[in-house]
Amino acid sequence: QVQLVESGGGLVQPGGSLRLSCAASGSIFKINDMAWYRQAPGKQREWVAVITSGGSTEYADSVKGRFTISRDNAKNTVYLQMNSLKPEDTAVYYCNAEVVLVARAIVSSWGQGTQVTVSS
View 1 (tube, rainbow, N blue to C red):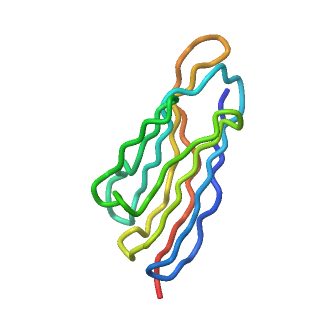
View 2: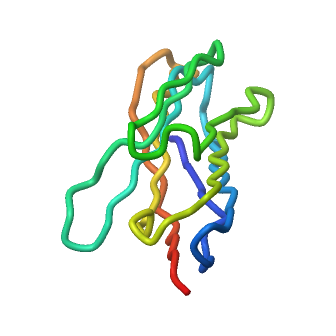
């Protein structure tokens, strides 16, 4: 019913930047919160940032001041601008969206993940 497709991951040197995108499609009436999570090898998935439909944002302490989450409601897309990247930011990054379907059911949808590797 809803598909989330992430893009923008890759290999970057410490101190570099990447911009992730996540586009939602399907039987969407509207999207409430959109968020980014990440999972490093051998670790549990952790929350990174969230943005409400009204544009309010919150960040994990580990990324505050370096990452910026934004969204384009017309395109059903959420972005994560990552600056001053560190090796410990290496992980698979997943987007998540709380979607109100055309049928008015509410579902929590996940993307397939995109790999971000920070290494020299």
